[in-house]
Length: 118
Image 1 (cartoon, helix red, strand yellow):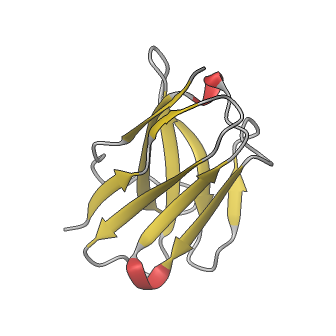
Image 2 (tube, one colour; image 1 turned 90 degrees about the horizontal axis):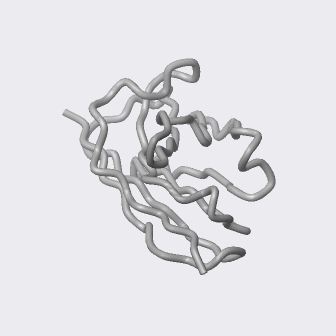
Image 3 (cartoon, one colour; image 1 turned 90 degrees about the vertical axis):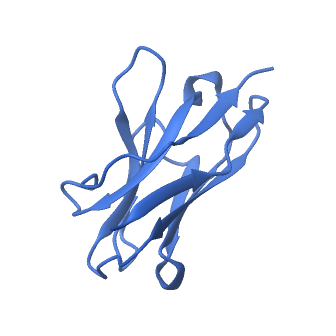
């Protein structure tokens, strides 16, 4: 059974950067897409970025040019480099795996809190 463990969140000032990590323990099929989601208070969970095994990636319009998703297939780990953070990026960030069209087929992990505030 694959488990998802997110880390790297914290408090950062506007304009700052954070790098999130997510380890998917267990066996991850090489064709699986990995993705980052976020959920702000009062909002639904939204897809932020996704990446295939072959490292094709896509981003939500709100984070394009600021966030970069990457993965280490040998370690079953996906990363999210977040730059130029704004208060609107404040949320709990979650990772998941699945297909390109449905990259969230596993039970959600604990997530990692990102707070952007001065």
